[in-house]
Structure formats: C-alpha cells, structure tokens
Length: 264
Ligand code: DAK
Image 1 (cartoon, helix red, strand yellow):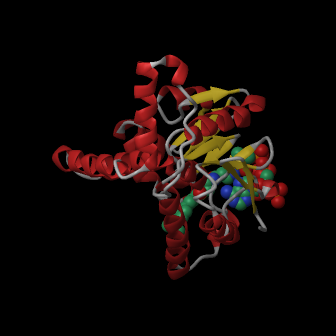
Image 2 (cartoon, protein in one colour):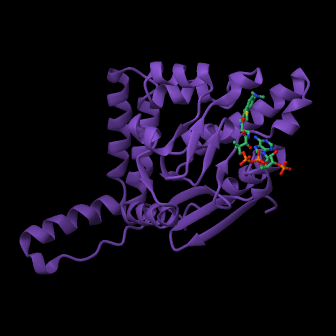
Image 3 (cartoon, protein in one colour):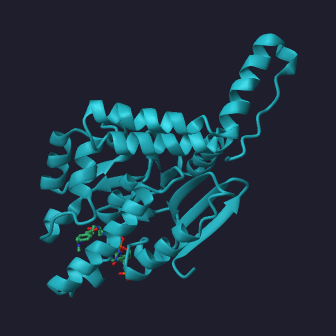
C-alpha cells in the first residue's frame, strides 16, 4: 500500500504510516491507505494491532498543512469527515490497537494516537495540539478525546496554548502508559500485543466494547452494557475451556495445560 505498510507476525499486525519525508503527515492518500489497511485486517488471524510511524523522528506530525492550506469550506469538511470516520473506525475497531509513538505526535498525530486503545512512546516523543497557532481548532476529535483522556483542565491548557509536551509530561498526565527508549519501543509494544493476543479474543473484544460503550452512558446503563457482553462470553469455546482449565488446575496442578483460545 502506497503510504502504509502492514505486516503480520503470528497473531499481531503492525501498521506503519510510511511517509517519513513529511514526518508521516496525514494527507488524503495516507488516510485512504490507512482506511484500506484496517478494512483488510483478517480478524480471524490477527488478535492485536500496533500502529506506528516510519523513521526514528516522527510518529505523525499532524494533518498535511500543505494540503489543508488551500481547502475550501466544503473540501475542509470532506477532509475532516475522512479523518474522523477513519479515527472512529480505529477507536471502535474490534481488535485492540496500541499506538507505538516514535517521535512527533502533533495535531492529527496526537489525535490518531488517542483513537488507539492506549499509547506507549519513546523518550524522544513530543505531543501537542498546535492548531490554535494555525488559526483552526483540532479537527480530528482532539478537543473531545484529549479532554476524556487527561483532565478537561489540562486538555484545555494544552489546546489553548498550542504548547508541545515531551514524553515525561505525557506520561505524568496519563496520555501515555509507558515511556521507553527508542530501541525498546517496538519490542515493548509487540510484547504487550502478544500478551493480549494470548488471551481469549472474544473476551478481549468484548472488554474493548464494554469500556468504549460504557463510557458514553451513565453508570446504570454502563453496567447493563457490561452484563450483556459478559453474557455473550458464555456461548464461547474460550470461556468453557478457560474455566475448565482453572478447575483442572485446582483438581491436580499436573493437569494444567496451555489454553489455546480459539476465537469462537
Ligand atoms: N504537514 C505537511 N508537511 C509537514 C508537516 C505537516 N503537518 N510536518 C512536517 N512536514 C514536513 C516539512 O514541511 C518538511 O518538508 P520539506 O520541507 O523537507 O519538504 C519535512 O516534513 C520535515 O519537517 P521540518 O524540516 O519542519 O523538520 P523539523 O525537525 O525542523 O521540525 C516539526 C519538525 C514537527 C517541529 C515541524 O515540522 C512542524 O512544526 N511541523 C508541523 C507540526 C504541526 O503543526 N502539526 C499540526 C498540524 S495541524 C480538520 C482536520 C484535521 C486537522 C484540522 C482540521 N478538519 C476538520 C478539516 C488537523 C490539523 C493538524 O494536524
């Protein structure tokens, strides 16, 4: 695919935005390519995805300012919709998506990282929403996702000031879960992805849906969302085998075996 590489290793897929000359900035083509790669993921084969950027300098340095600079109002709306539809696809994608943030994550770069389930970054990462310095608001969900991920007050401060923050501050405010060296970033994310891939895939998917959907409604409704997704697991092989294995272990530790969850 033109600006996006996709590689599968076992049950983990790595999606790499590959436009390093422009610091992996998101133009329409990159958005289209990303959309096609997500549509093409074989969800029977792959259980967890890692999203990263090519090169050692930038994850994504934002939406493409050159392309945006000449947009009409209608074209701006269409560009915004293209990005928003893709980012929502990532956020609601049935499989977990880990953002491996390997450098600049600015504007649309921070926004695409925030559409992933969680973020791990290298120590050279820089995060920010510089849009107010460009005469626009964040357009790919930045005002909404940042306010939900960190405190509304911190989100407002970052967005109004257009100030960039480094990896340690991103960690301190909860924007990223872990900071690694540059060399360790991908191995760390792959290790995590493989741990996730080793758990029951239907349960993992239902957990993602429960957290996402539950956060949109009040607690009474959220608990019902969880009940339903919990109940669904009881129709799965994975639940039967996972629990049977626990009981075997109690009965006789020698009978414990590795459970090969089957996604059914
Ligand atoms: N767009 C296009 N090209 C970019 C780019 C970007 N966002 N960021 C970097 N590049 C390009 C540079 O132009 C340069 O290209 P050449 O000149 O070599 O051809 C190349 O990448 C290397 O960049 P630099 O030479 O500038 O590298 P430095 O190390 O000196 O600086 C930097 C790195 C990341 C600090 C700097 O490049 C920079 O400040 N970049 C812009 C960062 C930024 O402001 N990003 C936020 C963009 S605004 C909406 C939808 C979405 C959005 C808004 C509205 N609607 C609803 C329609 C989203 C907005 C944004 O993301």
